[in-house]
Image (cartoon, rainbow, N blue to C red):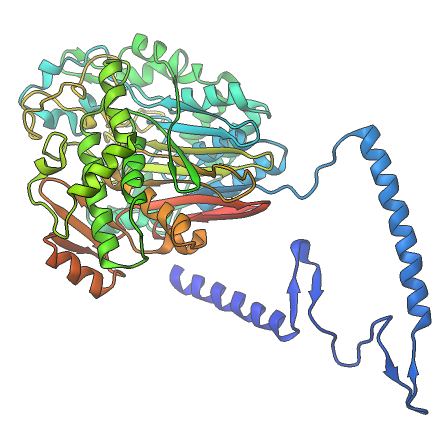
Length: 624
């Protein structure tokens, strides 16, 4: 039914396009008609036509006088405008901005913030709170994330880390031999950071009042919103049973024994009440206020108080330096450990030394090998606050172009079944969730850019929900524990410990031209568990190396690879030539009929903005 409606919309849009084209006109910005030719019988003031009676040419002197008079008036207006500019200051002219998220209504709310005079950080606050409301299976104030902020005018950038943190009760010996305790439920919940992170970003960069950014989302929660394609796809996939949801979750997402369906209306008055409190009190509402006890009350396991009020009160947002590399004429900026930004840079460093060709089997093979080397190195990282020098050294190795050259020299026409060949720990780490994240890219008229990913880790996080409607994360599943199913690790950098943040796959990134400021800028990120870095790299290559526009770059089919066991999953639009070649090179291939990850992004060249949200997930961007 919804597909039929969309087909009808597309048909109507196509009909309108044909009607416009029939007149041979082009619609300019603001709807002005710029004609590429004159209609039959139409004349121009300087156009010559034959007299019917004599056949002589008649110059339209009256039209010429009109043009001259208009020119004089126009010049006077321009002069007056210049005088006013000198005395009154710079006017708002020709500015553009965009918001790309996985929920169209949330992109619209974010864009409305920009149109009201807010900046990219303001728009991010509204948009991310909105996606947590409308797609609560992926993100929300019970989760955490990481944000890259880049001011293109001042060339200053920083990372705001608001990832979840292990509680004071998180003793690694508690999980020894049984990491399943970390997968779901109370013991998988980390101290959430999303609300603290948004508040910190707003306090440092925001322009509009905090309440004006939260209130539109509160209104949406009270008025209701439709079940998205993302949620509907999850429920139809069979990955969840209705019984997997807590009774409180079932109240909103299960109707008459079945999951809600695409387009059905959901009203969240419970979250609206929380958002109202957040509008008035800020993060104190959760971390040291009305809703603190609701969180701690549901996080008791046996006799263990898994999360305390002190844990919430003491949560800290971390400000970190950007990590970056060069890729040909561009600078690629991303987020550091414990996130996966270094993996993006490692892969790009290796691929920079090749002559890449779009849809070429050898190029795809080399790309997969680059992802394997990057993934192996990523395993050696951890929370820099717990082993600063070790994490710093591993990161520098991942950014080292001589190391990238060494990896190129090691790469042959065949892949290697032994994961130890690629370095790292020789295993695929446990815990990398398939979904449960949202990415947002925002660019404003003043060239402030925000690339942010926020996550619950798995679908609906831990499955634990407070009585007022906050869905809590299971981010602690990304930690390793002694003798876990992931094997005995040679490093303890990612062992769970109180106050520690686990490794994650998030990699929000921004690309700018190294020499020309107004040249192509690219703001993108992805969701999809351990495949996030590869999704970011593939999309970046499509734009930077193959000169695709952003829409085509995001829509192009993608692959993902894991180290142990070696496994390459490809989307069904990949050509048979590429698939057969990869198989001949020793890759173990699996075709996926479902999307393997999702990308959102904004591209800007000079003042021209292109924003696109991945249709695989039903996203829609908004721009002006």
